[in-house]
Length: 111
Length: 113
Image 1 (cartoon, each protein chain N blue to C red):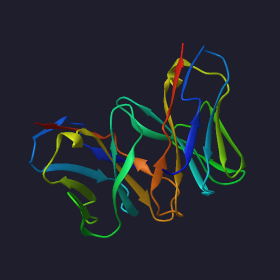
Image 2: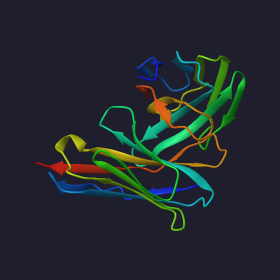
Image 3: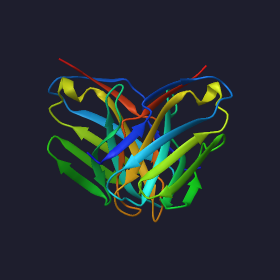
């Protein structure tokens, strides 16, 4: 069974700080990695995807992938109260139709 | 907006009754998915489809069936609903092959009494 693990939190950070969200996965053949944000009562929305080792930046968000360590992270710089949500990590294997999700980390940004 | 519509958005039913949830897409994507989301379990895949009449099971498929007779519609059926199937159900489409991201519908909240 492919597993994706996330710290459930809640993770609390002050406004303006860097929030660091982490995810590990069990399938070494995984090739596609996604971060979703989900506000309470809403559907998940895609924030970032990453396929290659290293960092990928998009505005205040940076995704980091280390396939050797089977680890993917999401950094949120200059955190805002509007970033308060649950963040879901998702992983897909090579040629796989399926995405496996972690249980999510709840982030609270304190004004 | 990925053009995904789920219906009904809310439903309350009784144990033992059949329930069908509908997912409709307007953009002709090949891959469609049904997930359920429960506290403490996150999003879990029920069934998915990779084309008309082509479907396969996910990790929590027991008690559920699906059908896809047209590209745009993917139906999830609970033949005889149980209280353990009380959940929020999300339909999703995958935009490009096996590397693309998922886009989700707004969800259907099902309560089985």
